[in-house]
Length: 242
Ligand SMILES: Nc1ncnc2c1ncn2[C@@H]1O[C@H](COP(=O)(O)OP(=O)(O)OP(=O)(O)O)[C@@H](O)[C@H]1O
Ligand SMILES: [Mg+2]
Image 1 (cartoon, rainbow, N blue to C red):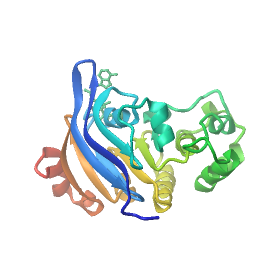
Image 2: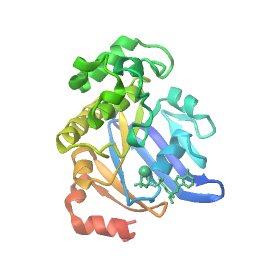
Image 3: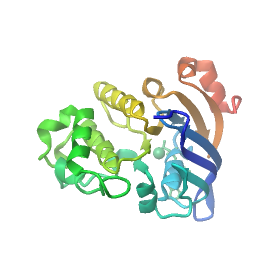
């Protein structure tokens, strides 16, 4: 893996609902194996940003995945190009299906090739807890287990860039450790990961660097080490570090 390869390149991206623009002029590059935390208060535009990159929220700007320009493509074509989104509150899960059935929904491999069983094995290596409950209906799982299945579903397509929208929501501290460890392991395999969060300690466990989105604009940036520096973080939120 060449860690200097840019896997996700977002340039001058905006996101909007009707005529209301909620993210403005967002530009960022992720290289292989890098984890970027996108922090910011409620309503900052974090979910809209990920949605616009994934093509499920209207927007404009350039999105390039693995060298392939996808900004004008529908969401499913962006998935095929290697871009995966795990929406907020496990929004990609089918609650009445079992774990195994959920993992069987996505097309396997970005190009439609690859073995489903191999991908499922990878998900189970990442989240061994799911092994014993593959035939259990997802609505009967804990929030943490559902989050693991949701991430697993995104991984079935063998993405090069994974976007996670506030994975910590509603999860117990012990499960957060499972999720942050899985994110680090995935990054070590070369996946680029963009994760929105409001839990700074959890973000610090996963991220190489962070940026703050506030009012739809990037107001600051820093390294993971700065995440424990309250002053640096406050400056980033206030726009003094932009
Ligand atoms: N479907 C929608 N239609 C219209 N406006 C929306 C829609 N979804 C979000 N918004 C608005 O867009 C802005 C950004 O919302 P968004 O959900 O992206 O923020 P967020 O940073 O993800 O917040 P949270 O931390 O609460 O998840 C907010 O002002 C919100 O009210
Ligand atoms: Mg959100």
